Length: 188
Image (cartoon, rainbow, N blue to C red; front, side):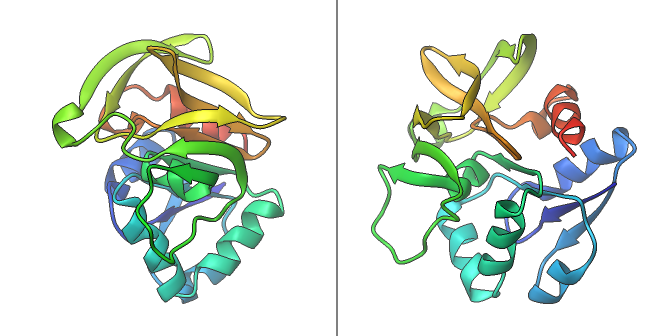
């Protein structure tokens, strides 16, 4: 199994360390030619969602990545990756850079406030208590039919799955806990 990590911006290196710990092969997608490589799954890391969405278009990655996800390739979207996968985004700045619009969720961008609103908690993810690091995080305001809520914090949805798509508002790659990455690899 080979996992591609979108390495345009954000915390992609930390995901690579988690994949290594789990024995998964990985490589980075940095340009359009990288998307032609063979891979079984994709991670869209945290970072700045507007920048990631803009680069997907500018680097001619948008259509190919969207097509692979719609064809059933497993994808993990973390924080900004959650926003990038969402069909609907609230509290968004006006710009022409669209999300991939593949997961039937409504994401509230910067839902937990500014950088100073970052925090750490231990909460349940799919029945297992894990550490969760939130950094200027979004949350999921609502989910559509077929979306399974995997975790809530203070009544807000912070992890969900729809078919081949898994998203978290928190950063599992910033802890030593492998639960989320293991769950994702089990989807492949």
